[in-house]
Length: 193
Image (spheres, rainbow, N blue to C red):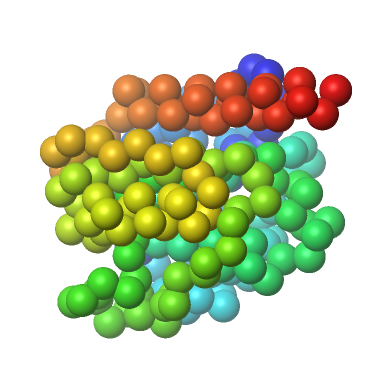
């Protein structure tokens, strides 16, 4: 399966993803890409963020791959927990990058309404990418989230929150995880054939 056979939905986290964030770069370079825009990036409300993600998925004309970062990963998990089966079938897979642990001690107040974290497996292939020095989720918590969600997990060394502040602008090396997801989707297609 090649890039471009999907509708890529970029799902940013808290504060959104500025122009120099890797999600913005990927949106500009991947075909059929669009960003989920939230009404309030600073005081996120779980129900509003999930509803906006649901609208974006419903409006896609092709099968969807979600590209989520931080609180966007948690939004995807909450969407899965409440979506109808026909909605879930529209999503083929997701790279989940630097998921925010909304249950961690000292979690910022605006994110706490996203707790508790959903504990159901995602019904589509996913690749979770964490970091061993991410202030938003420890390596152990990233692995735990990935295990619960049924994701293939990679924990990178010393990459922080994989955002602009940690030096990740274009993050072209991260495309390897999108390629890995596409390999998982190809494997799944072959098993179904």
